[in-house]
Image 1 (cartoon, rainbow, N blue to C red):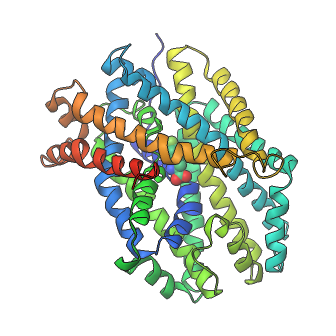
Image 2: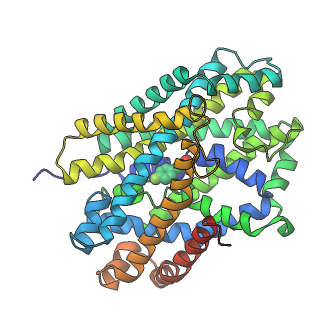
Length: 448
Ligand code: PFF
Protein backbone atom coordinates (compact mmCIF):
# COMPACT_ATOMS: atom_id res chain seq x y z
CA UNK A 1 0.00 0.00 0.00
CA UNK A 2 1.29 3.46 -0.81
CA UNK A 3 1.61 5.95 2.02
CA UNK A 4 -1.38 8.33 2.24
CA UNK A 5 -0.54 12.02 1.71
CA UNK A 6 -0.18 14.39 4.66
CA UNK A 7 0.13 18.13 5.02
CA UNK A 8 3.78 19.17 5.11
CA UNK A 9 3.13 21.57 8.01
CA UNK A 10 0.38 22.65 10.39
CA UNK A 11 0.56 26.15 8.93
CA UNK A 12 -0.07 24.63 5.50
CA UNK A 13 -3.15 22.89 6.85
CA UNK A 14 -4.45 26.04 8.54
CA UNK A 15 -3.99 28.05 5.35
CA UNK A 16 -5.67 25.37 3.22
CA UNK A 17 -8.63 25.00 5.59
CA UNK A 18 -8.98 28.78 5.90
CA UNK A 19 -8.65 28.98 2.14
CA UNK A 20 -11.65 26.72 1.89
CA UNK A 21 -13.72 28.70 4.35
CA UNK A 22 -12.67 32.13 3.05
CA UNK A 23 -14.44 32.42 -0.27
CA UNK A 24 -17.21 34.18 -2.14
CA UNK A 25 -19.20 33.65 1.06
CA UNK A 26 -17.01 36.16 2.90
CA UNK A 27 -16.50 38.83 0.31
CA UNK A 28 -19.51 38.52 -1.96
CA UNK A 29 -22.21 37.14 0.32
CA UNK A 30 -21.47 38.30 3.87
CA UNK A 31 -21.61 42.05 3.17
CA UNK A 32 -24.91 41.87 1.31
CA UNK A 33 -26.55 39.41 3.71
CA UNK A 34 -25.47 41.62 6.62
CA UNK A 35 -26.71 44.63 4.67
CA UNK A 36 -30.10 43.06 4.07
CA UNK A 37 -30.47 41.87 7.66
CA UNK A 38 -29.85 45.04 9.54
CA UNK A 39 -26.07 45.05 10.09
CA UNK A 40 -24.75 44.90 13.66
CA UNK A 41 -27.37 42.70 15.31
CA UNK A 42 -26.98 40.18 12.47
CA UNK A 43 -23.21 40.25 12.85
CA UNK A 44 -23.52 39.56 16.56
CA UNK A 45 -25.75 36.51 16.06
CA UNK A 46 -23.41 35.32 13.32
CA UNK A 47 -20.44 35.54 15.71
CA UNK A 48 -22.30 33.68 18.46
CA UNK A 49 -23.29 31.02 15.96
CA UNK A 50 -19.68 30.59 14.80
CA UNK A 51 -18.66 30.09 18.44
CA UNK A 52 -21.43 27.76 19.58
CA UNK A 53 -22.24 25.82 16.41
CA UNK A 54 -19.55 26.36 13.80
CA UNK A 55 -16.40 25.67 15.82
CA UNK A 56 -17.75 22.49 17.52
CA UNK A 57 -18.88 21.05 14.18
CA UNK A 58 -15.59 21.95 12.53
CA UNK A 59 -13.77 20.15 15.36
CA UNK A 60 -16.05 17.15 14.84
CA UNK A 61 -15.31 17.08 11.08
CA UNK A 62 -11.56 17.26 11.74
CA UNK A 63 -11.95 14.49 14.30
CA UNK A 64 -13.89 12.19 11.94
CA UNK A 65 -11.36 12.78 9.19
CA UNK A 66 -8.35 12.16 11.35
CA UNK A 67 -9.78 9.13 13.12
CA UNK A 68 -11.20 7.71 9.88
CA UNK A 69 -8.05 8.54 7.95
CA UNK A 70 -9.81 8.55 4.57
CA UNK A 71 -12.12 10.54 2.30
CA UNK A 72 -15.57 11.54 3.66
CA UNK A 73 -17.30 8.25 2.72
CA UNK A 74 -14.33 6.05 3.63
CA UNK A 75 -13.94 7.74 7.02
CA UNK A 76 -17.55 7.01 7.94
CA UNK A 77 -17.18 3.44 6.66
CA UNK A 78 -14.10 2.88 8.82
CA UNK A 79 -15.60 4.40 11.94
CA UNK A 80 -19.21 3.25 11.71
CA UNK A 81 -18.89 0.07 9.62
CA UNK A 82 -18.95 -0.49 5.89
CA UNK A 83 -22.69 -0.98 5.54
CA UNK A 84 -23.70 1.52 8.15
CA UNK A 85 -26.33 4.12 7.16
CA UNK A 86 -23.86 6.76 8.37
CA UNK A 87 -21.92 6.16 5.14
CA UNK A 88 -24.84 7.88 3.43
CA UNK A 89 -23.88 11.06 5.28
CA UNK A 90 -20.43 10.81 3.72
CA UNK A 91 -22.02 10.09 0.33
CA UNK A 92 -24.36 13.07 0.41
CA UNK A 93 -21.54 15.36 1.47
CA UNK A 94 -19.46 14.27 -1.53
CA UNK A 95 -22.43 14.97 -3.81
CA UNK A 96 -23.04 18.33 -2.09
CA UNK A 97 -19.44 19.45 -2.61
CA UNK A 98 -19.62 18.42 -6.27
CA UNK A 99 -22.88 20.25 -7.01
CA UNK A 100 -21.60 23.27 -5.11
CA UNK A 101 -18.47 23.33 -7.25
CA UNK A 102 -20.56 23.24 -10.43
CA UNK A 103 -22.40 26.49 -9.74
CA UNK A 104 -19.71 28.19 -7.63
CA UNK A 105 -17.51 28.06 -10.74
CA UNK A 106 -20.11 30.04 -12.68
CA UNK A 107 -19.99 32.97 -10.22
CA UNK A 108 -16.22 32.64 -9.85
CA UNK A 109 -16.00 32.95 -13.63
CA UNK A 110 -17.63 36.39 -13.36
CA UNK A 111 -14.77 37.42 -11.03
CA UNK A 112 -12.20 36.39 -13.65
CA UNK A 113 -14.12 38.37 -16.26
CA UNK A 114 -14.17 41.43 -14.00
CA UNK A 115 -10.43 41.21 -13.32
CA UNK A 116 -9.88 41.52 -17.06
CA UNK A 117 -12.55 44.21 -17.48
CA UNK A 118 -11.03 46.32 -14.71
CA UNK A 119 -7.46 45.84 -15.93
CA UNK A 120 -8.56 46.91 -19.42
CA UNK A 121 -10.09 50.07 -17.90
CA UNK A 122 -13.60 49.17 -19.11
CA UNK A 123 -15.13 50.09 -15.75
CA UNK A 124 -13.24 53.38 -15.48
CA UNK A 125 -15.38 56.50 -15.91
CA UNK A 126 -18.40 54.41 -16.84
CA UNK A 127 -21.78 55.72 -15.75
CA UNK A 128 -23.89 53.65 -13.32
CA UNK A 129 -26.14 52.72 -16.26
CA UNK A 130 -23.17 51.54 -18.31
CA UNK A 131 -21.87 49.48 -15.38
CA UNK A 132 -25.26 47.89 -14.92
CA UNK A 133 -25.40 47.16 -18.63
CA UNK A 134 -21.94 45.53 -18.51
CA UNK A 135 -23.14 43.07 -15.91
CA UNK A 136 -26.34 42.30 -17.82
CA UNK A 137 -24.31 41.87 -21.01
CA UNK A 138 -22.08 39.33 -19.28
CA UNK A 139 -25.08 37.42 -17.95
CA UNK A 140 -26.67 37.32 -21.37
CA UNK A 141 -23.53 35.98 -23.10
CA UNK A 142 -23.38 32.22 -22.51
CA UNK A 143 -20.22 31.88 -24.62
CA UNK A 144 -18.30 34.40 -22.54
CA UNK A 145 -19.52 32.87 -19.30
CA UNK A 146 -18.60 29.36 -20.44
CA UNK A 147 -15.11 30.55 -21.31
CA UNK A 148 -14.52 31.96 -17.80
CA UNK A 149 -16.22 29.04 -16.06
CA UNK A 150 -13.91 26.66 -17.97
CA UNK A 151 -10.81 28.76 -17.15
CA UNK A 152 -11.74 28.74 -13.49
CA UNK A 153 -12.32 24.98 -13.39
CA UNK A 154 -9.06 24.32 -15.24
CA UNK A 155 -7.17 26.38 -12.67
CA UNK A 156 -8.92 24.46 -9.88
CA UNK A 157 -8.16 21.10 -11.50
CA UNK A 158 -4.53 22.01 -12.18
CA UNK A 159 -3.97 22.72 -8.48
CA UNK A 160 -5.83 19.66 -7.19
CA UNK A 161 -4.12 17.30 -9.62
CA UNK A 162 -0.73 18.23 -8.12
CA UNK A 163 -1.79 16.67 -4.82
CA UNK A 164 -1.99 17.73 -1.20
CA UNK A 165 1.48 19.11 -0.53
CA UNK A 166 2.47 20.22 -4.01
CA UNK A 167 -0.95 21.40 -5.13
CA UNK A 168 -3.41 22.44 -2.44
CA UNK A 169 -0.92 23.30 0.31
CA UNK A 170 1.56 25.09 -1.91
CA UNK A 171 -1.13 27.18 -3.60
CA UNK A 172 -2.87 27.98 -0.32
CA UNK A 173 0.45 29.30 0.93
CA UNK A 174 0.60 31.60 -2.08
CA UNK A 175 -3.05 32.59 -2.42
CA UNK A 176 -3.88 33.27 1.23
CA UNK A 177 -1.10 35.78 2.02
CA UNK A 178 -1.86 37.52 -1.28
CA UNK A 179 -5.51 37.63 -0.34
CA UNK A 180 -4.71 39.17 3.06
CA UNK A 181 -2.50 41.80 1.45
CA UNK A 182 -5.10 42.75 -1.14
CA UNK A 183 -7.79 42.92 1.52
CA UNK A 184 -5.62 45.07 3.76
CA UNK A 185 -5.01 47.45 0.89
CA UNK A 186 -8.74 47.81 0.29
CA UNK A 187 -9.42 48.11 4.01
CA UNK A 188 -6.96 51.00 4.35
CA UNK A 189 -8.50 52.61 1.27
CA UNK A 190 -11.92 52.22 2.92
CA UNK A 191 -10.66 53.93 6.09
CA UNK A 192 -9.76 57.04 4.11
CA UNK A 193 -12.83 57.11 1.92
CA UNK A 194 -14.96 59.06 4.33
CA UNK A 195 -17.53 56.38 5.05
CA UNK A 196 -15.56 54.32 7.59
CA UNK A 197 -17.37 55.68 10.63
CA UNK A 198 -20.78 54.85 9.23
CA UNK A 199 -19.56 51.44 8.06
CA UNK A 200 -18.24 50.58 11.53
CA UNK A 201 -21.49 51.77 13.06
CA UNK A 202 -23.47 49.73 10.57
CA UNK A 203 -21.48 46.55 11.21
CA UNK A 204 -20.83 46.82 14.92
CA UNK A 205 -23.63 48.72 16.60
CA UNK A 206 -26.40 46.27 17.32
CA UNK A 207 -29.96 47.45 16.98
CA UNK A 208 -31.92 44.40 18.10
CA UNK A 209 -35.20 45.83 16.92
CA UNK A 210 -33.96 45.06 13.40
CA UNK A 211 -33.38 41.41 14.21
CA UNK A 212 -36.22 39.31 12.82
CA UNK A 213 -36.44 35.51 13.27
CA UNK A 214 -35.51 35.27 9.60
CA UNK A 215 -32.33 37.28 9.97
CA UNK A 216 -31.43 35.26 13.04
CA UNK A 217 -31.70 32.10 11.01
CA UNK A 218 -29.89 33.63 8.06
CA UNK A 219 -26.98 34.30 10.43
CA UNK A 220 -26.84 30.67 11.59
CA UNK A 221 -27.17 29.39 8.02
CA UNK A 222 -24.44 31.68 6.78
CA UNK A 223 -22.03 30.62 9.52
CA UNK A 224 -22.31 27.12 8.07
CA UNK A 225 -21.67 28.10 4.50
CA UNK A 226 -18.79 30.35 5.37
CA UNK A 227 -16.96 27.72 7.46
CA UNK A 228 -17.39 25.09 4.67
CA UNK A 229 -19.22 22.72 6.98
CA UNK A 230 -21.45 19.83 5.99
CA UNK A 231 -19.81 19.11 2.62
CA UNK A 232 -17.08 16.73 3.70
CA UNK A 233 -14.32 19.31 3.15
CA UNK A 234 -13.11 19.46 6.72
CA UNK A 235 -13.37 15.66 7.05
CA UNK A 236 -11.22 15.22 3.94
CA UNK A 237 -8.71 17.90 4.95
CA UNK A 238 -8.63 16.49 8.51
CA UNK A 239 -7.70 13.08 7.13
CA UNK A 240 -4.36 14.46 5.92
CA UNK A 241 -3.48 15.78 9.42
CA UNK A 242 -0.85 14.27 11.67
CA UNK A 243 -2.00 12.62 14.88
CA UNK A 244 -0.48 15.17 17.21
CA UNK A 245 -2.24 18.26 15.88
CA UNK A 246 -4.55 19.91 18.42
CA UNK A 247 -7.91 20.02 16.64
CA UNK A 248 -9.37 22.62 18.98
CA UNK A 249 -6.67 25.14 18.28
CA UNK A 250 -6.82 24.37 14.53
CA UNK A 251 -10.59 25.00 14.44
CA UNK A 252 -10.21 28.23 16.44
CA UNK A 253 -7.51 29.52 14.09
CA UNK A 254 -9.44 28.66 10.92
CA UNK A 255 -12.69 30.18 12.20
CA UNK A 256 -10.92 33.28 13.51
CA UNK A 257 -9.25 33.89 10.14
CA UNK A 258 -12.53 33.35 8.32
CA UNK A 259 -14.41 35.74 10.61
CA UNK A 260 -11.66 38.32 10.43
CA UNK A 261 -11.76 38.28 6.64
CA UNK A 262 -15.56 38.63 6.57
CA UNK A 263 -15.40 41.64 8.90
CA UNK A 264 -12.47 43.18 7.05
CA UNK A 265 -14.32 42.68 3.76
CA UNK A 266 -17.33 44.43 5.28
CA UNK A 267 -15.06 47.25 6.46
CA UNK A 268 -13.51 47.48 2.99
CA UNK A 269 -16.80 47.48 1.12
CA UNK A 270 -19.30 49.44 3.25
CA UNK A 271 -17.21 52.62 3.64
CA UNK A 272 -17.14 53.09 -0.13
CA UNK A 273 -20.82 52.20 -0.39
CA UNK A 274 -21.74 54.78 2.28
CA UNK A 275 -19.42 57.49 1.03
CA UNK A 276 -21.03 57.22 -2.40
CA UNK A 277 -24.52 57.29 -0.87
CA UNK A 278 -25.40 53.82 -2.17
CA UNK A 279 -27.66 51.19 -0.59
CA UNK A 280 -25.88 48.68 1.73
CA UNK A 281 -28.72 46.20 1.24
CA UNK A 282 -28.34 46.11 -2.55
CA UNK A 283 -28.28 42.30 -2.66
CA UNK A 284 -26.15 39.91 -4.73
CA UNK A 285 -25.35 42.64 -7.27
CA UNK A 286 -23.51 44.57 -4.53
CA UNK A 287 -20.02 43.58 -5.60
CA UNK A 288 -20.56 43.35 -9.36
CA UNK A 289 -22.69 46.44 -9.80
CA UNK A 290 -22.40 48.72 -6.80
CA UNK A 291 -18.67 48.43 -6.12
CA UNK A 292 -17.61 49.12 -9.74
CA UNK A 293 -19.74 52.28 -9.65
CA UNK A 294 -17.73 53.52 -6.69
CA UNK A 295 -14.39 52.57 -8.20
CA UNK A 296 -15.22 54.03 -11.60
CA UNK A 297 -14.96 57.55 -10.29
CA UNK A 298 -12.24 57.08 -7.65
CA UNK A 299 -8.66 58.20 -8.36
CA UNK A 300 -6.72 55.11 -9.43
CA UNK A 301 -10.10 53.38 -9.39
CA UNK A 302 -9.14 50.89 -12.06
CA UNK A 303 -6.34 49.61 -9.81
CA UNK A 304 -8.70 49.30 -6.85
CA UNK A 305 -11.11 47.37 -9.05
CA UNK A 306 -8.37 45.00 -10.28
CA UNK A 307 -7.29 44.42 -6.66
CA UNK A 308 -10.85 43.83 -5.56
CA UNK A 309 -11.76 41.31 -8.26
CA UNK A 310 -8.42 39.52 -7.94
CA UNK A 311 -9.19 39.19 -4.25
CA UNK A 312 -12.57 37.65 -5.07
CA UNK A 313 -11.04 35.31 -7.67
CA UNK A 314 -8.32 34.07 -5.28
CA UNK A 315 -10.82 33.54 -2.50
CA UNK A 316 -13.07 31.57 -4.85
CA UNK A 317 -10.18 29.46 -6.11
CA UNK A 318 -8.96 28.46 -2.66
CA UNK A 319 -12.52 27.34 -1.85
CA UNK A 320 -13.18 25.51 -5.10
CA UNK A 321 -10.04 23.39 -4.73
CA UNK A 322 -11.43 22.10 -1.45
CA UNK A 323 -14.78 21.24 -3.09
CA UNK A 324 -13.06 19.29 -5.86
CA UNK A 325 -10.73 17.55 -3.41
CA UNK A 326 -13.71 15.99 -1.59
CA UNK A 327 -14.74 13.86 -4.57
CA UNK A 328 -11.19 13.38 -5.88
CA UNK A 329 -10.18 11.95 -2.48
CA UNK A 330 -13.14 9.57 -2.70
CA UNK A 331 -12.09 8.21 -6.12
CA UNK A 332 -8.43 8.01 -5.10
CA UNK A 333 -9.08 6.36 -1.71
CA UNK A 334 -12.02 4.11 -2.51
CA UNK A 335 -11.71 3.32 -6.21
CA UNK A 336 -7.92 3.53 -6.44
CA UNK A 337 -8.09 5.87 -9.43
CA UNK A 338 -5.07 8.04 -10.12
CA UNK A 339 -5.30 11.63 -8.88
CA UNK A 340 -4.85 12.98 -12.40
CA UNK A 341 -7.63 10.88 -13.91
CA UNK A 342 -10.00 11.62 -11.01
CA UNK A 343 -9.35 15.35 -11.18
CA UNK A 344 -9.75 15.52 -14.95
CA UNK A 345 -13.00 13.59 -15.06
CA UNK A 346 -14.57 15.25 -12.05
CA UNK A 347 -13.76 18.77 -13.16
CA UNK A 348 -15.17 17.94 -16.58
CA UNK A 349 -18.29 16.61 -14.83
CA UNK A 350 -18.55 19.80 -12.74
CA UNK A 351 -18.20 21.83 -15.93
CA UNK A 352 -21.06 19.96 -17.62
CA UNK A 353 -23.29 20.08 -14.55
CA UNK A 354 -22.54 23.81 -14.30
CA UNK A 355 -23.90 24.48 -17.80
CA UNK A 356 -27.61 24.39 -16.87
CA UNK A 357 -26.77 26.74 -13.96
CA UNK A 358 -24.98 29.03 -16.38
CA UNK A 359 -27.84 28.92 -18.88
CA UNK A 360 -30.19 29.93 -16.05
CA UNK A 361 -28.98 33.49 -16.59
CA UNK A 362 -29.69 33.50 -20.31
CA UNK A 363 -30.89 30.69 -22.61
CA UNK A 364 -32.88 28.83 -19.96
CA UNK A 365 -33.94 31.83 -17.97
CA UNK A 366 -37.57 30.79 -18.33
CA UNK A 367 -37.05 27.21 -17.23
CA UNK A 368 -38.13 27.26 -13.61
CA UNK A 369 -38.74 24.75 -10.85
CA UNK A 370 -41.06 24.92 -7.84
CA UNK A 371 -42.55 28.17 -9.04
CA UNK A 372 -39.81 30.63 -9.79
CA UNK A 373 -36.47 28.93 -9.11
CA UNK A 374 -34.05 28.71 -12.02
CA UNK A 375 -31.69 25.72 -12.16
CA UNK A 376 -28.98 27.88 -10.56
CA UNK A 377 -31.33 28.96 -7.74
CA UNK A 378 -32.40 25.37 -7.30
CA UNK A 379 -28.82 24.12 -6.86
CA UNK A 380 -27.98 27.01 -4.58
CA UNK A 381 -31.03 26.43 -2.41
CA UNK A 382 -30.54 22.67 -2.33
CA UNK A 383 -26.96 22.97 -1.17
CA UNK A 384 -26.92 26.06 1.05
CA UNK A 385 -30.30 25.67 2.65
CA UNK A 386 -30.62 21.90 2.90
CA UNK A 387 -27.57 19.75 2.24
CA UNK A 388 -24.93 21.72 4.18
CA UNK A 389 -27.03 22.25 7.34
CA UNK A 390 -28.27 18.65 7.26
CA UNK A 391 -24.77 17.30 6.64
CA UNK A 392 -23.46 19.38 9.53
CA UNK A 393 -26.22 18.23 11.82
CA UNK A 394 -25.55 14.58 10.94
CA UNK A 395 -21.86 15.06 11.71
CA UNK A 396 -22.77 16.61 15.07
CA UNK A 397 -25.19 13.80 15.95
CA UNK A 398 -22.81 11.07 14.85
CA UNK A 399 -19.75 12.39 16.62
CA UNK A 400 -21.66 13.44 19.73
CA UNK A 401 -23.77 10.32 20.20
CA UNK A 402 -22.57 7.42 18.06
CA UNK A 403 -18.83 7.66 17.53
CA UNK A 404 -17.38 4.53 19.08
CA UNK A 405 -14.28 6.05 20.48
CA UNK A 406 -13.68 6.27 24.17
CA UNK A 407 -14.10 9.76 25.48
CA UNK A 408 -10.48 9.77 26.53
CA UNK A 409 -9.44 9.03 22.95
CA UNK A 410 -11.61 11.85 21.64
CA UNK A 411 -10.49 14.12 24.42
CA UNK A 412 -6.90 13.48 23.50
CA UNK A 413 -7.56 13.92 19.84
CA UNK A 414 -9.54 17.12 20.13
CA UNK A 415 -7.66 19.14 22.66
CA UNK A 416 -4.38 18.21 24.08
CA UNK A 417 -4.01 21.20 26.34
CA UNK A 418 -6.96 22.30 28.50
CA UNK A 419 -9.29 20.07 30.47
CA UNK A 420 -12.40 22.25 30.14
CA UNK A 421 -12.56 22.00 26.35
CA UNK A 422 -13.80 18.45 25.98
CA UNK A 423 -16.81 18.67 28.33
CA UNK A 424 -17.83 21.96 26.72
CA UNK A 425 -17.44 20.51 23.22
CA UNK A 426 -19.50 17.50 24.27
CA UNK A 427 -22.43 19.65 25.36
CA UNK A 428 -22.26 21.87 22.30
CA UNK A 429 -21.98 18.99 19.83
CA UNK A 430 -24.65 16.83 21.46
CA UNK A 431 -27.28 19.41 22.21
CA UNK A 432 -26.66 22.98 21.08
CA UNK A 433 -25.41 22.38 17.51
CA UNK A 434 -28.03 19.80 16.42
CA UNK A 435 -30.88 21.82 17.89
CA UNK A 436 -29.68 25.08 16.34
CA UNK A 437 -29.28 23.46 12.92
CA UNK A 438 -32.63 21.69 13.24
CA UNK A 439 -34.27 25.07 13.82
CA UNK A 440 -32.57 26.53 10.74
CA UNK A 441 -33.59 23.54 8.69
CA UNK A 442 -37.20 23.65 9.81
CA UNK A 443 -37.27 27.33 8.96
CA UNK A 444 -36.00 26.55 5.45
CA UNK A 445 -38.94 24.22 5.04
CA UNK A 446 -41.12 27.20 5.76
CA UNK A 447 -42.64 25.69 8.91
CA UNK A 448 -41.58 28.65 11.08
N1 PFF B 1 -16.81 28.63 2.59
C1 PFF B 1 -16.95 28.97 1.21
C2 PFF B 1 -17.27 30.44 1.08
O1 PFF B 1 -17.44 31.11 2.10
O2 PFF B 1 -17.36 30.91 -0.04
C3 PFF B 1 -18.01 28.16 0.52
C4 PFF B 1 -17.91 26.69 0.73
C5 PFF B 1 -16.74 26.01 0.36
C6 PFF B 1 -18.96 26.01 1.28
C7 PFF B 1 -16.65 24.64 0.53
C8 PFF B 1 -18.88 24.63 1.47
C9 PFF B 1 -17.73 23.97 1.08
F1 PFF B 1 -17.67 22.69 1.24
